[in-house]
Amino acid sequence: MTRLLYILLYLTIVNNEVDSEKLSGPKVIPKGKLQKAKPLTYRAAVYEHKVIFPYPWAKNRHMAVMQMMANLKIYDQQAEIAGAKGVDIMVFPEDGIYGYLIKDRHVIKWYLEPVPDPKLVDWIPCDEPMRFPQGEVQVYLSCLAKRNKMYIVANMGDIQKCHAGVDPNCKPDGFYQYNTNVAYDRNGRFIAKYHKQNRFFEPQFNAPTNPEYSYFDTEFGRFGMMICNDILFYDPGLELIRNHGVTDIVFPTAWSDTLPYYSAIGYMMSFAVGHTVNFLGANIRFPHNKKVRFHGSGIFTPAGALQYVYDPYTPFGGHLLIADVPINKRKVDRIPCDVGPVKFGLPEKKLMMHPQFKSTVLKDWYDFVLVKGTSGAVTICQKGFCCTLQYEKERTYDIFAFGVFHGLHKSYGSMYQQICILTKCRTYAIQSCGLPALHSSTRFKSFRMTGNFTTPFIHPQIIVADKKLKLGLPAIGSFHYGVGGLQGKSVDRPLISATLIGRHYHKDCQTCIGG
Image (cartoon, rainbow, N blue to C red; front, top):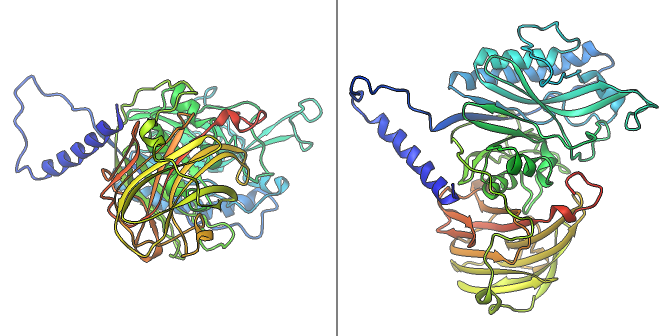
C-alpha cells in the first residue's frame, strides 16, 4: 500500500466513524447476511512516565522491589484508565520502573529479574506467580494485562547466569545483565522478550552476543520490539520490517531531546513515515535536566502523527496518549540497498550553486546557502551528494538556511549519513544556522526537498512551531514523502525545520551490530 493510499484510508476511517455516530438507528441486515465486520483500527496507548527514582539505592532485593512498586502502582493506575477506554495495546517507557541513573552493575542487580525465554515456556505469571523465582515485576505486569484485557509492553532488567572463565563474554561476577522489553497478551501470558542491542552509555548492561529479532502477533498486526538507541541502526528494526513481516513497532525509550532533528517526536515520526509502519513510542519524563532533557512520546502511522506530546514545562505527572490506529496492511518491499528511492536528475542539477558558508549541526560541518525571498530553487552539494530545495513562503524577518552533509557522524554513535536540511536559524547570525531553534513565525506555502541519495533508508522529518515555544508536528495530509522527495503544502504552522536523513548502515563500522 502506498503512503498516499494509507492517508486516504486514514481519512476514510475517520469520516466513517463520524458518520456512524450520526445514524439514528441500526441498519437492517437481510437474514443470512449477518457477519462480524473486520475492524479497521485498533486502540493504542503510550504513557510518558515521570519516574520516581529509587533513593537511596537498594542494598538487597526486598528494598529494590519496594522502590520499583512506587512506579508500578502508577503503571497500574494508567493501565486501568486505558483499559476502561477500550485500549488494545499499551506501551510503557524504557527505565520507567527504576530510572536511568544506576550505572553500577553491582547495584542494579537487585532491580533485575531472571526473565525466561517465552519460546521455551508457556507462562501466565499472574496465574503462576511462584513458578519462577524473583519474578515480582513480571507477575505485576502480567496481572495488569490480564485485569485490563490488553496487550502490555514494558521495559525492565533481565539477569541470567553465565560461566565466568568459560564463556569469554561473561563478566567476572558470573551474570549477563540486559536492558529488556517484555510483552504480555490480553490473558497475561508472557509472549515476547527482547534485549537491547545498541547501548548508549550503559555499562551496567551487556549487549546480546548476536542480533535479536523479537516480535509478537496480535489480531491487529505483527509488532516488532526496539529500545531507544536501536532506532538509529539497522538491527533490529530494519531487519524486522524487511524480512520478518513486522507492521508495527513498540518502542520504550529514554530519549534525550536533541535538536534540530533528534527530537523524540520528530525521529519517531520520521521512522514511521520512512518505513511505512505504525509506531508506538513511550518516553520517560524528565525535561528539566539541563544536560539531558528526557521527554516526547507519541503514536504514529505512515501518514504522520495521530497523538504526541512535547511538553518541556509541566513539572509534575506523566502523559497518557490514546489513539485509534488504522491497521497496517503494508507488504514488505525488498529494496536493493544501493538504489535510492528519490528522483534526482537534470532539472535539479541545473539549479546548482556554490555553498555560501559552513556551520555545525550536532558537531558535523554542513555546507549551507541562505533561503532568500518568498520563492526560489537551489541545489547544493558536499562530497558528491547533492540536495535540492524548491520553496514558496511568507515574507518574514526569520532567517532560513538550506544545508547538506555527507559523511560519518560520530558524536551520538558511528553513523554514516547523507542529510538535506531546511532549518530556521536561531538568530540573525549565520553561525546560528544549525543550532536548536524553538520558535518561528514563517509559514511555507509549499516546499519540495530531494537529494541524489545512494541509500533507500531515508527518514523524512518536519518540525513546526507550536504555542508556548513547544515543538510540533505537521498535520496528516499537509505533507507527503515518496519518490518525489519530501513535500509540504500549506503546512498548518510556522516551519522550524524539514530534513531528509539518509542512512548508510553498512558504512557505519565493521564491528557494529548491523554494520
